[in-house]
Image (cartoon, rainbow, N blue to C red; front, side, top):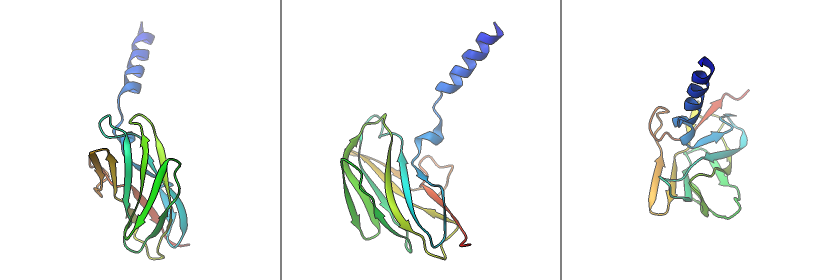
Length: 146
């Protein structure tokens, strides 16, 4: 009987949504100042059931970045922003949107890459620098140049 209770509790915990998994994350999460690195924005869901149709990323001053091709998506690049449009990425599917970035030699310890996720006529703004916020901006930890 005790085993059944433990199994039921474990299953209940496994089925609970984890808020951290709903956010847009950056991978790798760390890079070295002055380094050029390929980063991936990990998108794990759409907007309240709607598929993702565009992703826009604000590029902080001092950081240079270019979007990398994503099959089925049109790449855009402009002053201070890069993005992808097309897809769509169904709400329940995950994808990586890659960019190549060069960090300045004097980069701050944390670089935020604010993202706007577009799902048709809906938008999720992942722009808050507070990691505990409902929609935090993806954050890249910058290590000092060795």
